[in-house]
Every structure is written in C-alpha cells, then in structure tokens.
Image 1 (cartoon, rainbow, N blue to C red):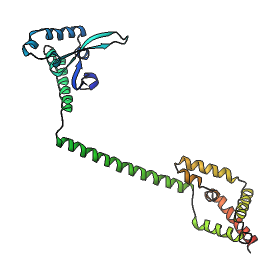
Image 2: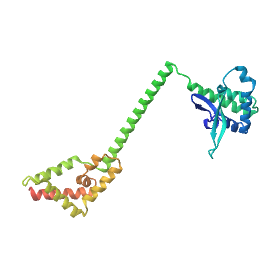
Image 3: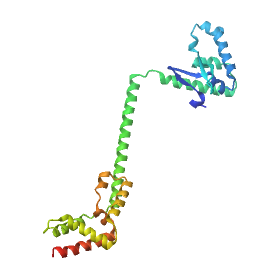
Image 4: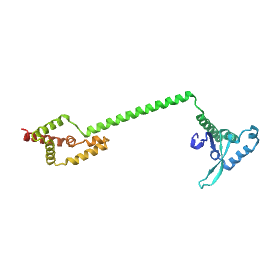
Length: 252
C-alpha cells in the first residue's frame, strides 16, 4: 500500500500533493462525489473561520482524459487530504489514511533544508561511494586484463629459447648474402609444402581468436607466422626440422 505509484503523492512546485482522482480511486469513491466534498469544505465555514488561503489545502487544477478532454480536479496538500478524509470511515479507509500521512511526512521531510552537518555527511557519503566505485572499477579492470593475458598466453604459447634458436639459425644462414628475409620466407615456404598448410590462413584464424578473446588491436596486429607455428605442436616439430636442414645446407 505504501507504493508511490499507488498512493500518487508527488512534488508539485515544491508542494507535496495528491490528486483528488487518485484519492477517489483508492478510497473507492466516485470522483465527482469527492469534488463535491472538497467544494463543500471550501464553501463551508471552516476555512473562513481559519482565515487561511484555500490553496494551503486544495489547489484547483485540471487533467485530460485519453481523448484529450479536459476535466477539473483538485491537488490536495497533507492538511487538505486530512480534512477531506476525516469523514471517511472503515478499516480500509483507515489504512489508506495512515499510508498517505506517512508518505506525506516522508516527502515533506525530504524537502526540508538540511543542516550543515547533514550536508557534510552527505558529501562524505558521496566521496566514500565514489572511492568505493573507483576501487571496484580498478579491480574489475585488473581482473579483465589478467583474464585477457591468460587467454592470450593460452592461444599463443611462447617458447623464447626456441624462438631465439630459430632466429639465430636464420641469421647464420643469411650471413653471407645478408638477405635475412629471403631465408625466413624460404623456411615458411618449405613448411607450407611439407605440412600442407597455408600460414596466412592460419594467421587470420589466430587473429580472429585473439579478437574474440578481447586482446588489444595492437597485439593482434603483432601476431605473426611464428605465433602460428608455435601454437601447433606438429607445425613446430616440422619447422624445427626444416630449420636444422637449412642450417646444414647453408652454414655447414
């Protein structure tokens, strides 16, 4: 029952009010009868004796139905609501009265100016919340980075010693004619022929897997044939044998 949507209590120009239509609906009364009750109060002696403005209790307003036709309604302040429902009896009516009064109190308290201490406490709470969120974001980023690195390491298995050995052998082969790239390309060509594979296609597939794993674009672009070869045990064994054969051919 204390649902804001069901109760319909709202802030209208810094006044906490509720529509006479919603009151009529919740108290199971016809809206025209509720309007009549409000107008009886306005035209009666009570407000005249108090010498207070009607708007402190009831604010005249209008609403539009689904067909855009305009009808009258009143916006009730807490005091107006109390005056109107004073004569509404029964257990259900009493429950609604209590629910409405509690909601009026809650929303009016939220509008009251806060003390300097309350403002300071709210500021401190906001700072602490921001720090907590920043810390959690940093932890999430760190976890994500570690996860990506683990995935990358799983996809690209790097044996630094093996790569150093391959590079040193290629360098020795190219020592005389100074054409390092030619010897490297020759080794790849021999691998494709012997293993019956296309390194370029396998490299594209590797880059797709890295992208799907969330690896940075710069690292994806840095992937090469050696990564492809090293990620496949069979290719690595064949390529190792080819490098040894070429070393014997060109260096020995």
